[in-house]
Image (cartoon, rainbow, N blue to C red; front, side):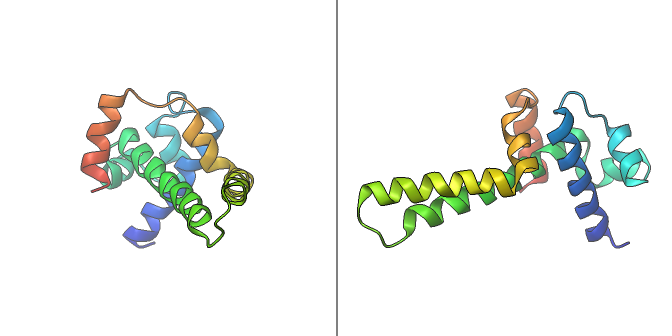
Length: 123
């Protein structure tokens, strides 16, 4: 498995675990075991649980933001149509990306801890 494929695998596994259990309940050991890798592999790719979580949240926010911007940017000029289309886009995102939505609405690390991880691993 290439480094990119391993990274994507860890993101997929982490997303599922964080969605199901929340940030605090998931450990690096659990992520590594689910991916059938050693803990150092998770640390190598993300620096730890915080870095992995930051990447997952960033990706989900990009998906959600893109979905909402597309709905708001369509050609309809009547405000009611814009609101209806945007609400439908949000509900569709929630239905089609339930794991990602759960990650966004569940518990998260303290803001200062996450901010450090986001700056380092997302940029």
